Length: 183
Image (cartoon, rainbow, N blue to C red; front, top):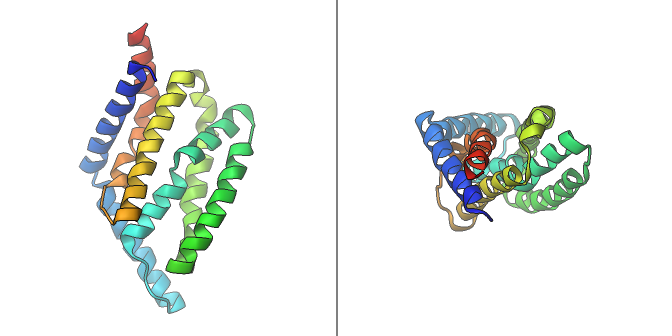
């Protein structure tokens, strides 16, 4: 990993998290999750899901590094292998989580589809910027967000992963900028 890649990834995560915190994205996601959860409870007479767990599972599925890479790869090259593997991994992951948290988790496919179709459709625009450094920066950014999500789920922490998501918007331009500076 080159220094320019590390610097771009770190700066992207810092700036993205600052933007997310200024926009109060984590709290807005919690409010939306509470609404979805209470609506689900009323309609299906079911127990509620821990909002923190629900948000972390949405991020884990809809914004994972492998899924983002798979959607970009499908949009740029037409190779859908990564998305098929991701679907299989998600299926078995959610069989486990659904046993603990119930059928409400089936609704996570909505943000997952929305995020991946958005990335797929915009992949053609991102293709000119997708060199090896940019893919490395994107993977590093997504990996840190996925790791933070895992820490939240495993240790019951409250790292604001939703607030980190604006980093995905910044990663390609900053990677390109750092690549130009490094030359």
